[in-house]
Image (cartoon, rainbow, N blue to C red; front, side):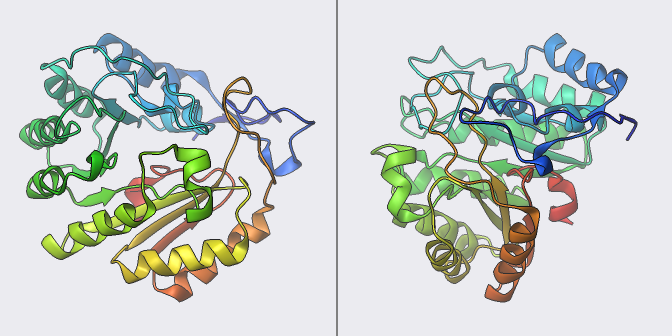
Length: 298
């Protein structure tokens, strides 16, 4: 990847309370490939979580001609206190969206596709059928492997089963944080036990699908709480894990960072997670759920 060697704070992390630590400074990718990806997404009227979640890796991923597609609109029915995606009353879903996602995959020549969504509690199936239509549309145009990063589908087992039937190669559902902080960060609807049950259900119904989950660290969790939670995930059949630093995307409505973990601590946590039994672990300050997802999926 071509880069301009220039210290720059991680984008999308409007932090309060002082300067960022040195390890959260990044090289800025050159603009050409970045614009190529952004132009395709704009031309096809698509949304990406890279943009809406103010991901610090956006420029790097766009420069690598990859992106995480966000389906089912750009307004979430929930208002998690760590997320910058707009929330409120969503618009109707565009029935043509699966076709346009597939077109973007084709133009970008992706070998691994990551599809996520806003939460749609206004749908009985939480948008599961739309996930399936997107998977089918991508499979119609290429042989790329497919990873879905889903919401919790409001504890609807049939919705989970429907996405499993579409047979994505990777099924990702983020845990985000430890059980003690679930209500504070995720609100009243998500339940920790259901997160575990969802992952377990996917693995039991389709053992060939690789299950995955991710955490944002630095929000007040302890090491002991985190390791206990990781052990729960392994016990419930989770194969792949991502651990990354939480960066406050919007100081007006998102919780502040409690602590910045140094890279060596991420390394130690990654090694501990591997010892617990995860098949693959990505652990580092800039790691996100779909960051270098193709390499993990291999």
